[in-house]
Length: 344
Image (cartoon, rainbow, N blue to C red; front, side, top):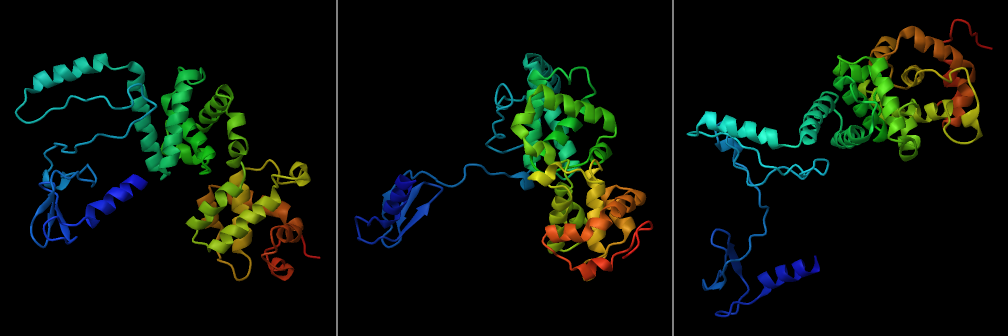
């Protein structure tokens, strides 16, 4: 980097040998460095330091010709790095000959790479449909490569269920937790039970427990869903933070309280997340959201949220205090009272 800065400075701070000035213009077409004052060519064949790639996609008129001078990035998951050449057709070429060449090339390709490329394409479709980040897609591709090479659990299994389980695993690892229902909505060919079974098998056979650590459990904690659910319900950023703090108070992950059993232990994380959203949405001065909208966003039945709310309500003041006391006890008293619970 230092050498580059020195060369760049010398390039534009040198003096013209004819007039002695340092006012130059660079002609990129010919590669010449020309003095503006006297027109002397100070340097010839200057290296163009701009980006090498360029595209003319808008000028091709949909001819199907790709004029890019560079290919895709290197993919270390493929045996040839993804840098192999593909035979394509063009105008004025014998299409029968092209098809024969493409067929011969397909026979010489590594079978593993062909299967991986097809799987990676399907993983990309799933991630795009679920609006997942590119980091999730890349992590899913790495996990699929490991499972394809090592895991016996995915052999002779439904490809749709395997890919769904891999994407689910990548979501948990990257902190973008998704539920099985959300995965099944995008991959209807796979059932929740089948995806869950393959997911557990892949984690066990690839020995990912040590690698993932708490990240594997992150998706099973309501904390992972709060920001996304509350954002979809147009709640305020401060309310996101309060919801996350309350879920951590409900289900502590560290300290002696992490082993204390409560009535809401073992409940679905999305059900607890929906209940927390319901609590915050009914506090005075907070963004009010109707219960049906909460249930639709979280994918939980109204009866489930009411049941968990009934279990949490007697402990709510203590839990809010542990969560940073974002609401006063007087505000908590204004919350709806469950049917079996009466105010003191």
